[in-house]
Image (tube, rainbow, N blue to C red; front, side, top):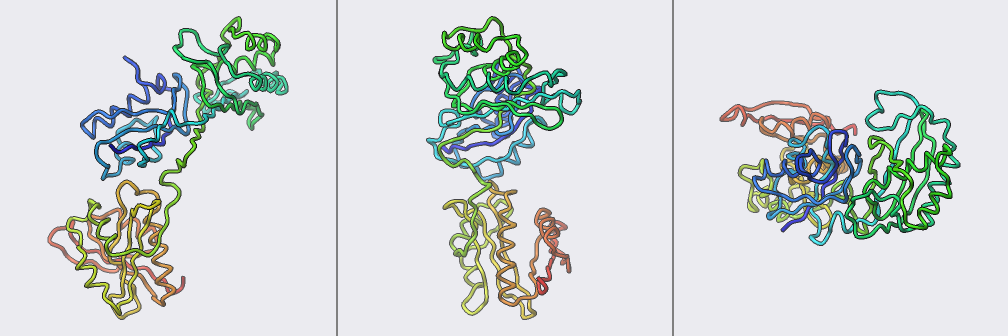
Length: 401
């Protein structure tokens, strides 16, 4: 089995929370259904934690297992399948021992309030017209009370099946923000169902004098609930951060480019679906013979070779021929091709070339868009057996770079 971490964000307004439920629209269900649609078999997605109905997430981590290593762009596929309320940021393979929920060491939530009626904020913030009646010193006095306790039975909803109400609070404070807003931030190793919204409501009512500070203190000390549920509306709450004891940067960081070998290039080529008939070792050896200036670049994610770019001096007109290149589907849109291109151009400039030239097929539209966006121009075309197979030559002037 191959385990993958998935980074995503979602607007919770139209969801009944993260966890799959009978006869309810949830984030987990939508993602699992999307997987089933394009993989044709069931995939269980395990989230880093539950979020209640209407609660948002800017940085959510989940994991899933596949029987075979994905040889296509999972991010692209999944983005097409899920609704506009979900964004997939990254999917990358991890060690099978890594668990999105059990390995998380902390989770951070933020609750937003605003005192101005703003239609652009109503789905992400709690509109509270009397916001300036709130004393931030009293808000923080109530928020800081949590540091003195570990058992939060007081802020656990009734009819909740939990084995323990112990939570370790690492952060709990209020700040004024711009545009007549207040923000509450709380970080803990775990949270109980409805806990954060009940804490926010408690702080507000302590600041307003509707709830005595000592009543909250004694309730926490005696492990009993308050005289009423002070929970605030869900739309102001967002899960903003998850921490793990290991690196979860995924593809965004840790990509390096350095000199590679023909063997690595051939291996990567055989896993790039656009290459209908990838060149074998003999063709590379024939072109990159001794005495012919050439360069082999390979991009790595940790120890895995994920992309390459090969070029050599083909003509005696001052141009460097960028012959072959590609990136594995699972690592695309992460600027790997851009890094390879920059490294090749720098090498060509340092070796006195005045231009970089390459040819591509008409059907490879992404390659053409990439080149045009990086300063290349179309210099000529050649007929192919079909319109798709028409050859397009492109060139970039680098003599003044």
